[in-house]
Length: 206
Image 1 (cartoon, rainbow, N blue to C red):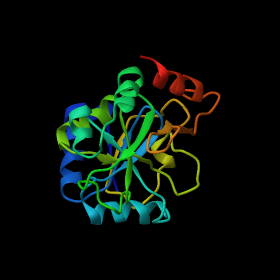
Image 2 (image 1 turned 90 degrees about the vertical axis):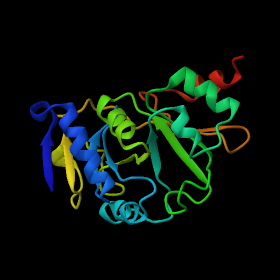
Image 3 (image 1 turned 180 degrees about the horizontal axis):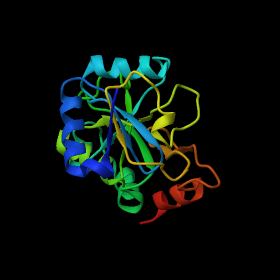
């Protein structure tokens, strides 16, 4: 496992090496606005399978992804007017929106829906922009374990770790499911990024 300190090599070089690893089927640990994430190119089935195995995550637990922008997002999900409202209001940032997926999303990632967000972290954002496709956004820990905020806490078996230092200990992203009626909000902690009330109110706004 190669560890690359972003502060020493610079953002450009770190992202360049990470993208090369992702394109060759590698797994990359990268910083986000919440905790360290475990990234694989969304359309690389072998790499996505490795994400499950490295995390010891059950295969029936779908993965979420990070996208660069709405244009990329629209290639992988059916973006509704409600989703557009939330994107304008809360993103980039720690809000994951679940939508019906397009065939470009492998069933291994999610059989019928896809949760995605645009990250506000410069490293995560640069990775998906340069790669040109989404990457998995699951936390880089063993399934059920504590979220990793330092590289010493990430799971083993990955190819590259982008060390951004210790991250602020923020809760994971809030999740809103727009494939159900009425929309459902999950993982909205009292000290989290967005409350259920904030998200649902934004959906009601003109």
